[in-house]
Amino acid sequence: MDTFAIGDQDFLLNNEPFRILSGAIHYFRVHPELWADRIHKARLMGLNTIETYVPWNEHSPTPGSFVAEGGLDLGRFLDLVAAEGMKAIVRPGPYICAEWDNGGLPAWLFTDPTVGIRSNEPAYLAAVSAYMESVLALVVPRQVTHGGPVIMFQIENEYGAYGNDKAYLQHLVDLSKRLGVDVPLFTCDQPFGTMIEDGSLPELHKTGTFGSRADERLAFLRERQPTGPLMCAEFWNGWFDNWGTHHHTTDAAASAAEFDALLTAGASVNIYMFHGGTNFGFTNGANDKGIYEPTITSYDYDAPLSEDGHPTAKYFAFRDVIAKHFPVPAEVPGERAPLPASVVAVNSTASVLPAAVRPSMVPGPVPPVEVTGQYRGFYLYETPLPGGGVLSFSEVRDRAQFFLDGVPAGVLSRELGERSVVIPAGGRLQILLEDQGRVNYGQRIGEAKGLIGPALLNGVEVLDWGVGAVDLGSLEAFRSAAVPLPPGDAAAGDAAAGVAGPSVSFATFEAGGPGDRFLRLDGWTKGVVFVNGFNLGRYWSRGPQRTLYIPGPLIREGANELAILELHGSATREVRFAVGPDLGPDEK
Image 1 (spheres, rainbow, N blue to C red):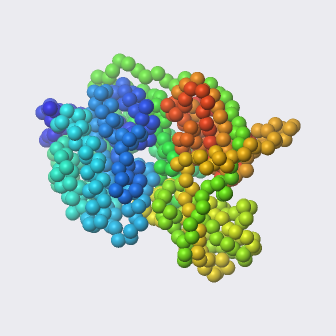
Image 2: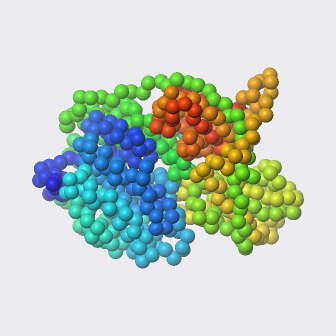
Image 3: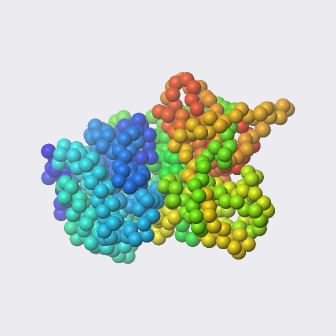
């Protein structure tokens, strides 16, 4: 079997110097039938290693569970890395950041306020230990020392930016070793202040995370670690987007020059991201540094390999840099060909409010949505409100639509800091609440979602609320309730009539078989799209993202179902399949 070790100056694979040229691919952001393609294209760029995070909340949606099938089959992903002749780095967190919902920490962890997150607290350590046992059951047999691809395993993640609990870090180290990890353990932190020291232990190999000024960052790292190979564990070559901003891009030539500086300095590197993928469903995270900013559905990241798996100018620029230092394969992946454009119109619809859920009564003050046991998506609050007036809350997390007897009565948005709405007199109040993504970085990780009390009507607290989660795991309730759309304006055509929200509308489109598509929703406002029951993620007219990526394996030969949950209303019944992606205007 192979060996992998930390030498005085180099990583050592079978006692020979080995430079890690790694690229990040998050298996949980890529359709599993496309994993092999993305891994292969990483090797064609000249990389020899694939790195991935492991999202605890995705694998363990409820306490005591661990899902490792389909798109969460980490073992299969690592096997495909090995089949490509590449090595692997695994970063299991338990906190991963990654612009991922709650930074990968399960929301159910936070329902007990006594649990000490990311610390040496017994209840938290018990939960982490159970998670790590499940992860390592997949990883340990796939270490290079067992004939597999895994050469390194990370302890925590940028912990120095959060805390310095050495007993907690030591617990993770001891646990990993006890469960069979015998490849090198490492930490990564930003090369600023005391983060590198705070986030690591003397026995762990320290790496840095940065995207510029490579020589300066490496010198900082070397001062704090006099021996061992230098490594940038996250070379930030792009960035992510938030709703309502521009599409972030970085110049390919400038990024390649920074990359070249890293390799010229003799450092190992992990490109974050090599291939970003997609925040399918409700998996996107958010930032909140005074203003709440949810991350968009696309995680293209302006990476060398685009969201739909095609090489970009940055891919070829990076490949040229690698070729200056190491051999690269002769094969080059093909670029994207334009897809055929087409139009499809929804023809039936079901209102969300009667079809969605029957809320359960929760006595007392307005509760957070965690009482439902569902930790993502949409929720419905109900209460009788015979008298009208100003209804206010301490905070709304994250977006609430108000309806009185089914008639829209206003919207409150966390982004805008809105906390009060005027409600007309008389009737039953319903509030459709959207969790727009849990904060993934900083002190607001793990906060409760929903209507944060007290709920006051003209200064008097409103008690006894019905609350329930909207189940979008299956659309059957909406299919059963859907009715044909009435004819529109004869002069303008049905498509100009639009669809009222909140509703789930359905269409059928034909396809000759699997193949990527890009869905454009001009004229629609805000919501979520499903193809053959699979949740593609959120759309929003405010942008920057204008198209949703549909991975080819989701499309089947013959009839396919398109379902659109529209929250407000559309100016059309049509959606379009575009010739390619449109992630919005950049900052140039």
